Image (cartoon, rainbow over all chains, first blue to last red; front, top):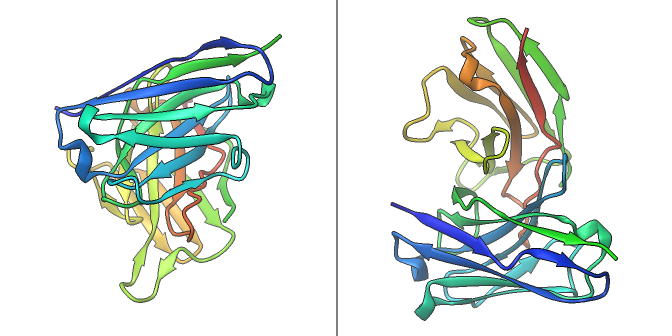
Length: 120
Length: 114
């Protein structure tokens, strides 16, 4: 079955960097677009970024554009989110999710999430 | 595209109908294929979201038939025909229409038992 496992979260100071990973199994990873979605404590869902199946296109929410980079290594069945210049408002649980298409649309499978806490 | 759900919270008796609304700031109906690029998700405490409905009205495999989606253009509805205890959750709509992709969610509707 489809399994997505996020890792790399933790506590980090404002202005520092962190890299999240999403390890995929149970499906042909290279055939699917992949997303990051985050959820601040007690708040709703916020879409963060998407990358197409072959890494040829990536798109970001305005709130993270220029600071975050999504990328993937299909040979390792893994997607990443490089987060730079972190701010307190980036504190959230970060979910990775699989798109139903090779490009981008909606997500049919989600990981359990990893918590990022940006605090001094 | 801004997605606005109503109400923010809702309390319904077991066995009764629950209705959640979602309005988009612009149409998410793609005219070339006549499809609405709108999904509904359910999120229970401590869990990731679960996809319920895509294309505004297509129920996903394994989703109980009491869940249904309707609407077109800018106005959409998620209906639970007969509320069960396990339906207590927060429900989100999401558009996947925008180009370039910026797939916004509604703010969520918290559904509780009355």
